[in-house]
Length: 349
Image 1 (cartoon, helix red, strand yellow):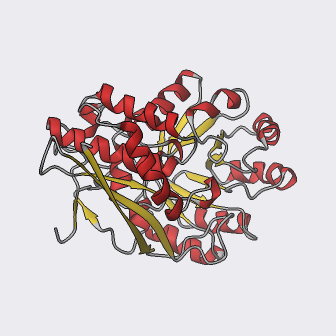
Image 2 (image 1 turned 90 degrees about the vertical axis):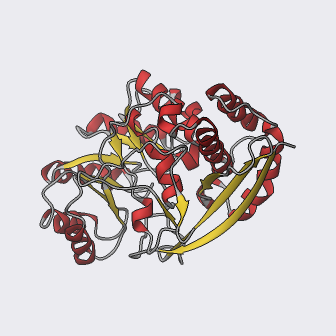
């Protein structure tokens, strides 16, 4: 076999507690992610680094990833170091097993990093994409309104803030944030609202300068999403309802935007194709992330030129990022450099 894969499960403390409406009872203090290293016998000395974030909501854990990774590696065989080879690998993984987006994502990112190193190109150039990308917002989890406002004040350098809602004090939280932050506010209820509560909030959201409403209702409640979009001047953005490119057609006429995440859809290649398809269908495009290291964020940044809004701050939520090489500009845009692949290396390495 030409390809060899190793994986490592990392449990990383978060800088601040981070809770969302569907968090597990012990969630919010640390995050678990999986880092892989990919080697190719045909190119000794080069290592591709990838990352997949296992989310129980989508049926994945670090244990399921460990079980699935060998199957996916066997499916891709020995792909050529070309964009066509990368596409063929994604097709082969989808043919081998359905779902398991985080496991596919880890291998896909590692392949892109490795092919970039083999060809001497940064990943965005390998894909023919621009370095002009939107600035990232900064996300703040559910907490007491005063605590959220203090974190918003500390993050005021960012051009927009994403506030997690679906708790007991949503309106008070937004009022408190608006008291310390003048820019656009994006809100994400992570499936935690009801029809009655959501429609009652609409005039308040407009008054407070909210820019978009992300996934207010459960994943399969498409009728509810469409009902709210009909009544809302703000775009409703599907996240949990928009896992892969196959979900997009069913959301046409239902929501105004979709949130694409590499760990959901399967990596850099699937995310780029999903963003392009979403634009073709008339959606506003949001590129999001999990609480990932710089590996996942750099991979996402490579396709960020295809997005209207960017929420790539997962590594900024960590108490310590184990990787270096990805830099955030003064304008809060991730800098896409000229180093081959993702341009990252481990700290201390």
